[in-house]
Figure: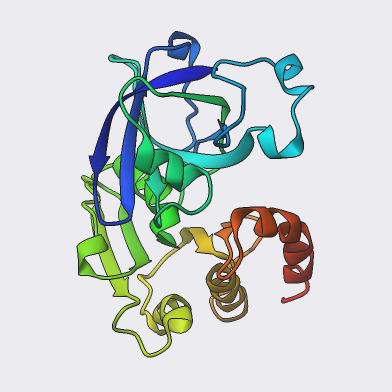
Length: 264
């Protein structure tokens, strides 16, 4: 499946929302999951392949020329206009996905598979806990929009500064705690410390924690050991790892997750 860039919104200094349409989006089937994602394929500079392409087109390519797969959350799917909106975190001309978003112009094409996804706020709990950073804002935003007016949510999001905060609209009763790395003495401990120090609302709750690997692991450990969270029912996953580029993290992630299972 592929689509074309229709427009791009610069939400913060590092967050871009790319709106895709056309292509083969007429056959796109939305997922009920609020962490729905696509597996996008980013063609490296200098590669002879163009979108759309078939698997056979990649056979003669060198590893350096092959498209790089990256997973991105669907921020919003507009079924009426057949528009797919994806948020990209970009830190200059580094990597493939963020750099592509920074250079993207209307008419550029993106090929992808999906959507997949597994989390949606449970209607059977008293409230919802959502924790993450810029990389999780798409799923957090989609989850909050899916909540009914009778729902309650507690949200913790760590970003670089106040200029990196975004609107998170919801009809539910939502308390958003924004945390800023720039002014923190220990940026890596900022998110897990805030969750650990929080007074949780009474009652049952479901859990969505996604973002940087070390931070999500620390939050996961706290929730299991101190809050009695059943990890088998929680949605907790590391999207990226500090001081690792995308390729290094992809190679290390499986072992990281295996090691993490021994934390509790």
